[in-house]
Image (cartoon, helix red, strand yellow):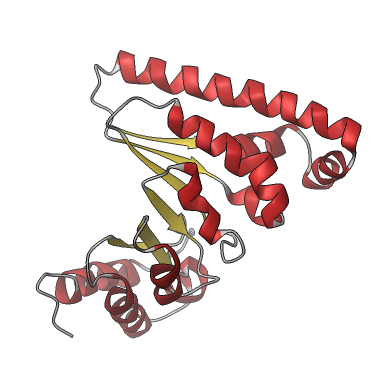
Length: 212
């Protein structure tokens, strides 16, 4: 069984809009309230997921937390209001379960901080190349992504998909630690032909020993 949950910062944005949340972060008195809310959210997520793990008899294989809202924060604010709480979530998860983070917005400015949270892998946005992500954190995290689900999968051709898959696998697969994927959920209307092209490309380029 796999589990997908909103991370603390994403849950916070469900409770108040992003503009109000940013105002709270920048106001010293209100930021204390933000931390208090994040404490409650984090502890609730930990209890919820551990109870799920218990209910399914320990068959949960992996857990993914979303951190899309974290993309809107500076590195300093990201660690204060998101990163440190992701770390707490990871520390509170059932032992032996693979822990992933998801950010399909922007990751380039905070990428190097994700390994500090203790996650095993990152499902990341197409704002940076697989090659850059591999160079910066490929020895610390499994990288998952990062085909543009709008530009390529939704609006591109099967040939575009094949070309992008070839590039991403060539950049990410050597040495292992890479999973070919779209950078986020597939959009409505994504051509089936493009999805099939991605599967064929994975089978064609992604087998070890790699041959390009």
